[in-house]
Length: 151
Image 1 (cartoon, rainbow, N blue to C red):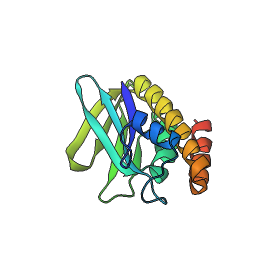
Image 2 (tube, rainbow, N blue to C red):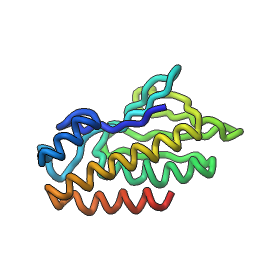
Image 3 (cartoon, rainbow, N blue to C red):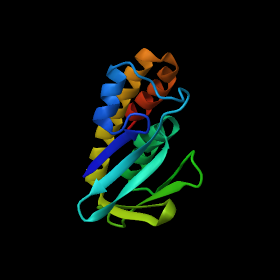
Image 4 (cartoon, rainbow, N blue to C red):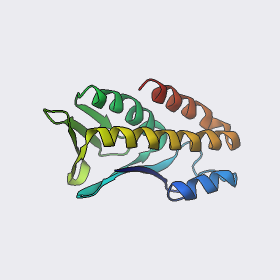
């Protein structure tokens, strides 16, 4: 199970971290356009494309906490149209995720939770490093840190 982030201006995680280390900033500094991609063998890869600054805290915080309690949850996107529905199975072993454009996949709940936590931590490290270069990202890093700590 993999959950990874991409940043439109930089590319995948490795490229994004290298760009931030080189003190590059996104073209539109008030946003961080990109995606969270969720993949698992035998299931289609889901792509949650949006501004990562408002997307990441609820995804890695609220959504993860609700899934941990085996509760369904919706996640709205800034980009239109868009929301994703996360629906745990009756036994709580899997989570079905549906989203715009007919996206639909089912993942093992424990694996999804672990992968979300790991991706959230990597994205937090990236946004914190970005805030070192461009301080306006500091509040977004703190918001994400608070959400990750609450799960």
